[in-house]
Length: 338
Ligand code: XIL
Image (cartoon, rainbow, N blue to C red):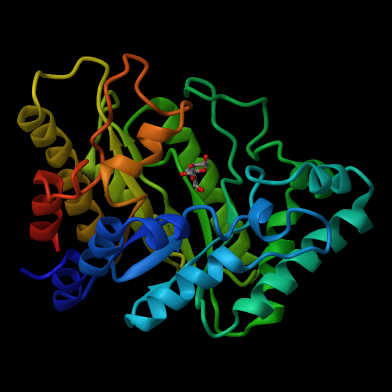
């Protein structure tokens, strides 16, 4: 049977997943799953600042190169993630952001220039700024007042760092697709409403001022203890597309509610139902490209990262393939959605 990426492609969509270079090299079942299912690869860690430039001026492209080589040998594309992000951002660079505007801008410019010139023509799509919007009150991770996340970049350069990053990226490459990526805008909670408002306002402002931005990435780390309203979500996508930008789903995965039914079939059916509703809304509003954040539950950050793992010790099953690399209901629902 064809893989998810072929099913997607035959219906005018694309499908991919976040990948880890070390697992591609060491786990043959993992590599086979990616070969079967993923048309687009996005590095889960290997394109982040702390991996690419762990010390000032010392760049390490080994992991990213490994993913690029693996993908290109199989005719797959690789998207870049993420140039300017407050997380996975090394201490030296945090410190540099505190050393005045000229220094801060110089460090950001040097990173963008080096990464984009090195990956030029091999990566055609980059998350230029990741997670610039602050989480409003009421969310699980609210931040201090202000619409923008109080990141090292924001503290150094104000909200203009976003525009600066996009302009620096465009200077490197006239045809690269430049993406602004964020989360927390998918579901129907009062604080998500406010986050959508903030993100839309930013996007409109960038477009008005002719900042080179091509698309908005919606991460889609969904949580089933939150209500989902397909009309509200579709409306948001249409509002962004009305500004002339495309919208892609960049990091789909699904966390179960606090109380979950007994047994994998019942749990997987609920996860799949949410995936189906989400994809139908996104596709109805014109989204053509979907990536999941990982492919197999065994290596999902929902399992391995304590910040997002279930507090009761049960293991999340939020990706299309289960612990044993088998397709589960979420896979079938996604295949039908394309
Ligand atoms: C996550 C990785 O999956 C984790 O393993 C790591 O510890 C932190 O980063 N939004 C993003 C991704 O844009 O880069 C994050 O990836 C998940 C949330």
